[in-house]
Each structure stands twice: as structure tokens, then as C-alpha cells.
Length: 595
Image (cartoon, rainbow, N blue to C red; front, side, top):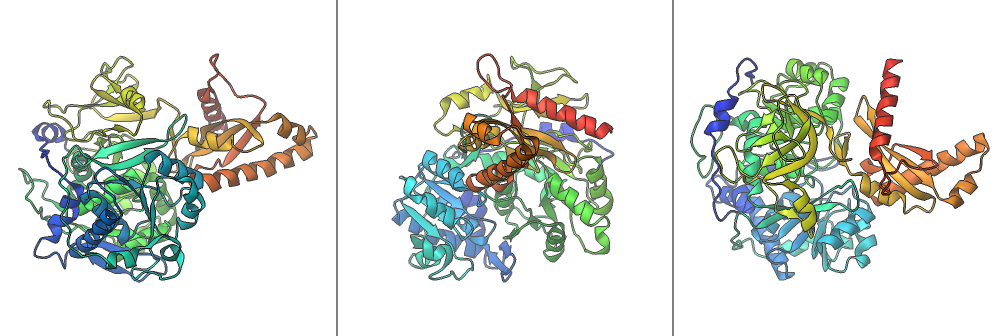
């Protein structure tokens, strides 16, 4: 799709948009049921399921709804009701979409959990949320079984087999309390959905914090509506006619066919709210690849399924660029839009996407609590390489100071979004609050401004330029890293007295997870002072600590590098000064680059 880098229609795009949020709204109704009631429901594809060792299969919207109805009936029989939390620990696969739709139309709350989580990460979230039912497959069943006895509220575990027909007697289907396939077969494909208000809770996603345990962000059904303007803009109108005006019809039909794929995990905000749900909302097919990412796989999927729209992290785009400098020589692509988020794309990747992929990448910014609020839309206003973009239609975004006042152009401040849009109407994007954490919710706001914790500069044209975190959160290889959870895990090791986690700048991945560790007196004595033996002892301990974190949290959270200190820099009130360590790493990086 040709971009419009030579003209800027941002002002009219923003000023002409108005929100319409009905009193009653349910995500499952708009993402599945309405499409399943259409005449072409049996032929309209919802999920294109594929993966290593799997037989590719297409699942229609009719099948999606029928299976969701069966699961809703089953969950209701298991005494899951309005507001109850159901944990979904599944990768990209058809049953994951079914689980979300079933929970939503039941009036319950879906709690996505990554299959990468270790037992400690799972246990905290399950206990904090008091989830009563959990749905998982082979990827997570062992970890779930290991912590099952410590999760008092968890009444039932449903195991999904490795294949669509189930795996009787083996894997998750055999190890769990209930076999997913057998359970659904016991219930009818008809279900009367629970009526929900737009403000009713729908999703509980835990976000990593800089200190203490992760916080659960509670999202209402209306949050999907708030997501749509950013999604459509970043996907260059997602196949719709960009010149059309007025509200969408009940079943919006595109001008051109659209197929979506993203490697983003459907258990994260990026995969769920930026890929799966918007694709289903518009009745389009989305590819569910139940396998690992690689540049070769990415290009093969883009070609095989004639993918037109995608969300690719900058790290993924960099890997694809290095592996295939001229991809059109090897693959036939039909891309119309690429959205990227998580960190700055950079000039090289930006140019690669334009020249080799034929698409101007649209960078986007958001977070779980207020997602998809800033970004670019190359068909309507020019993208600036490295910029986060501008506030998407319906979102009043600004850079503010500590008192909540808007900063002048070029002045460093914190990115924030106002509760009301430019017309004074409530913005539906906002989360309801942090789960069981009223103080944390209050701290998120200054007046009507919701603070993101991200620092930026706004240029004279209104574009935002990311400058880092106001707190100690950071991104590593596209993943959001909260130091607190990793530090808590490290100090549980018998050799660790204290720990601080900071980003170490890295040219390839943006940043690596680095830990500074203070040993216990016993461990320090065991280490000794002889240089050779000391270095070998620290090397072995580093491997042990990395294994320790990998086993308890997620693989991407383990520290790639560990440095041992006698003491951490502390404030007079006893708080670790991570900023000192972060600046030290940045200075070291600058020195290495200068050599």
C-alpha cells in the first residue's frame, strides 16, 4: 500500500472522530457471535491454525462460536459466574480463541498467563486473582501440577490436547482434572450469553512492577472499543476504504481482503488487544502459529497465508532484515501494513521496511492500562523514523510535568492521557484499576491525567520522542521487564543477600537484563579471595542464579549478565538506587562504542 509521507491529514482525522460506546457491550458478541449469525458464517475463516508437526487447519466463525458455547456451558456447570477469574495458559491456537470467547460471553474475567511463566510466577498470579478454573495445554501442565496444591482457590484444571481431536490418556488432556475435548462433547453448542455493560470487567492482565509483585490491570469490555482507532490507523485502515466516512455497519465489510499474523503471544496485551481481538472484531482471519519465531518462519508464514497486516517487534524486524536483506527474491509478499512497538525501530529497519517490504512501518506506543494511544498512520500523516508518533484519534495525549501541566515543545516530561478526548467525551481505553490495589490506581493519576511512566519530548509538529522510563521499568528484546520480580526471585537464592536489576544497553536487542548481586556473608566466605578460584566460583554461581530465575519466572527475564558487588548504591532511606547502576551501564556502553 502506498504511503502518504508527503501529506499530513492528522488534524482533520483527529478532530472529526467521535466515540460511540453503548451501555451494553460484550467482546464475545462483537468478535464472534455476530459473525457466526451471518449467512457466510460457515465459510468465513476466523483462525488459521498451524505449527511444527501440526496439520494446518482453518476454523470458521461458526465453529468458533459453537465451541465457545460448549465451553461456556461447561464453565457454568463448574460454577463459574459473572466476575469470576478464569486463567488461560495457552499459546497461539484455535482453543485459545475459543476460551476467550467462552469466558467473555459468560460474564467472567479472562486472565491470560504466558506459557513461558515458571511455577513462582504462575503461583503468585493464580493466588492473587483467586482464579477458580485454569485452561492449559502441554506447554504449562507440568508447572501447573507442581503448584496446584498451593493455589487454594483453583478448583478445576482443564487440559487441552496437542491436536484438535484431543489426546486421550496423555499430555495435558490426561494429566489435568478434565479433558477439554471430552468436556466440550458433553455440552450443547447453544448458549444464551450473559448481558454485560461496557464498564464490566473482561480481562485481568498482570503487569511487571519496578518494586514488589506484579500488578493486575483490570480491563473492561469497552477497552476493545478504545483500542480500535489505534489498530485501524496503525494497520493503514485494515483493508477498509480510507475515504469512507460515518459509523461502521453492524457487519463491516472491507474494501480489500485482509489476513493478520503476529508472533506476539496472545497472553500479552500486544497479542490479545493488538492482534487477536481486533482481527476478530472486524471478522477477518488471523494466523495462529503454535511454534517459535524465526526469520525464515516469519517470511514463510507471510507468504503461505498471504498476510496483509502484521505486528512485528523491532527485534523481529531486525532479525528478518539480517537474515533476508532482499526478501522479495525469495518470497512473494502481500503486506499492506506493519505495526511495530516495544522499542524504537531505528533508521535502518525503517528504511528496510520501506525499500524491501514495500511498507512504511507504523510505530506505536501504549501499555496494558491504556493501550494503543500513540502512533503513526503512514497513509494519513508522515511517519518520522524513531518517533512514537502522535495521539491516535479519540485520545488526548500530552507530555506533562510533575504537577500535571502540559510541557512546552522540546521539554522533557511524562507521556499521559486525559480521561476525556478533545471533544470532552470519556475515552473508553482506560483500565478499571489495579486488582486489589486502590493505592496503586490512585498513584497512576494526576487529576484527570493518567501517567504512563514513560518520558518523552514533543516536537513542534506534535510527534513524541521516547526518552526512557520515569521509573525503573525497561524493555529487553521487546519484552517489558520489571526489576522487582526478578530481584525478589534472586534474593530467594541462599547465596544472595541483595540484588538490583537494570538494563544493559545492547546494539542488537536494545537492552539486556543485567543483575548486580550482593552475596551473603556465608557465600562471600566460601568464594574466598584467590583471583582464579574466585572467578571460577562466581562463574558457577552466575550459571546457577540464571538457572534459578529461568526455573521460577520466564526465560526472557533471567539476567544475561551478573556482576557481584560488596554493596549496592542506596538512598538514605534504604532504597536501592537503580538509576546509579543504569547510568553506569550507559557510560560503559558509550565507552565501548567510542573505542
